[in-house]
Image 1 (cartoon, rainbow, N blue to C red):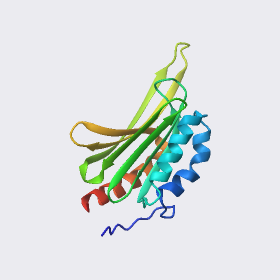
Image 2: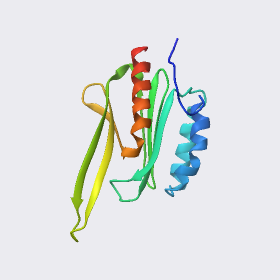
Image 3: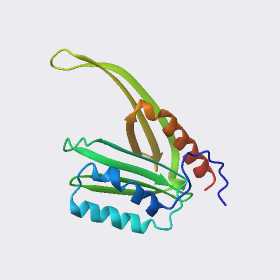
Length: 162
């Protein structure tokens, strides 16, 4: 029996319900009709999935330069990682007992563009390691540190109890 004391700011909900609520964010990236259909099928598949915690964001897609909608959610048994772009759907599921490490890394630097303009880069990377060299990696704004710290803690507590 999972006995995690969670101090989440959201109510415990089913995977399908959460993905339906996130649909408005997904629509911001203008995915294809096919990818919307795939997303709905994934949501249906997660109808009875009790979420322990989750993370989602819209980020720049490194492959085509457009936007990507990214969501990670987990329960006491499985982590689901879903990334949808205008043209692609990547959906990875990992059993929670395979998680062997989770870590947060911050990066602060200055970058100079071709016009000589300096900008500050402050990034946060959250990595979940499972099965040796396999990893789920999330890059976000440093502003998400508290949220990802909570998720990291909840994920490791859940993994220890599996």
